Image (cartoon, rainbow, N blue to C red; front, side, top):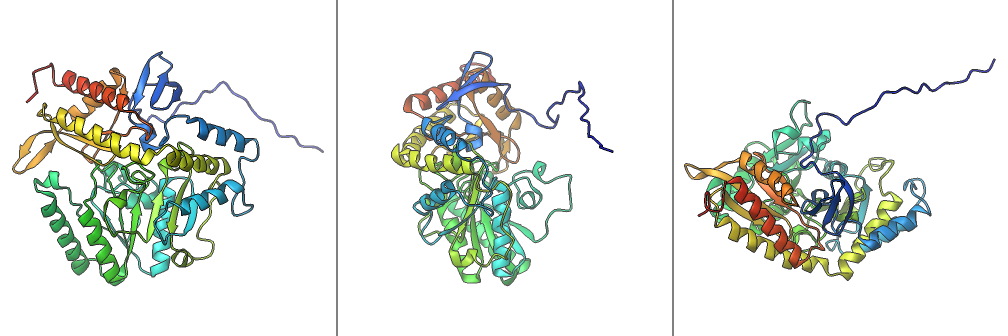
Length: 441
């Protein structure tokens, strides 16, 4: 007797999870460079870039061509089964931009996966259990990565128990404390030393994990002296320094890597993703070969890691960044953007602080001060973010309190587009604070 399987087709329709909330109502028809063209017929200047992902702009012709060509050769070649040329070429090209000494690379799909691979490697290599993270850091949404994240309770609440062995130290958030940067750095380093004395023994500590610029934590550059202090303590105690360059890397800050703003700081493990392939999902960790070799056999792998099409797009992305001098463009256009935002902030009491590096700017909205500290104003930040969309500029909010609007233009952004973005941003601020004079200084 022959048994056949039948597929039952129904009229049921599915919808996206109701928990997913769009920051804007825009539905994209097509996009190019710094512009998104909506199905509503409107054009939007995109200062979100897929949360810092489309580094070379939307649909850069060279990235598109590389992906198209690779699609016709092979799409999925699982790289622990068979190797493919794009991944070999990508690894070679990464060697030319990675910090000296970080000469071994492992590939995954997302930032969260790369973070977890870095933590796994650190614990295996040191045979120590503890990881020290810093207040406001964002490292992902998977269980281990969320356990390392302190950028907001929404990332880790509701599914305890979280991964153990994670300890948090203060971040030198000078504006929040009402201090100058040096005072904040001294405080944060002193508290880290106290943590290592009172709670987390150095010889039980595998790694320090930090972002060179906090992402979801509020677009806060990590002061160079703080990174230098972490490097010194890591060396003194045999602790690994892991730098999460998922958002700050690949030219975003006006240096190829965000940590390069701090002299004499090289990580033991570097994490990259987002801008690596201009929108294709690929991530990586890099470490010295002798350190990477301490990972246990079988501890690194994954079905889709190092996908051939994503690798080809990443190769093209590195070439475009080099050939079009986009790191320097990020520096120059970033200075233009931050200067313009500072001028806007001087006219509005609602804006308490403007900060950033390169094309990574945060505008913090506050209602005043309680003692020496500013009071976060999430309602105004959200209203401004929504208003920018109405005026043809796409932006996002961030920060633990949700009171920071962040601007993340593509590395190909032009001077005219920065000026246009600043004009549209100020129009939105003016609208929210009710008029040309109300709310201005």
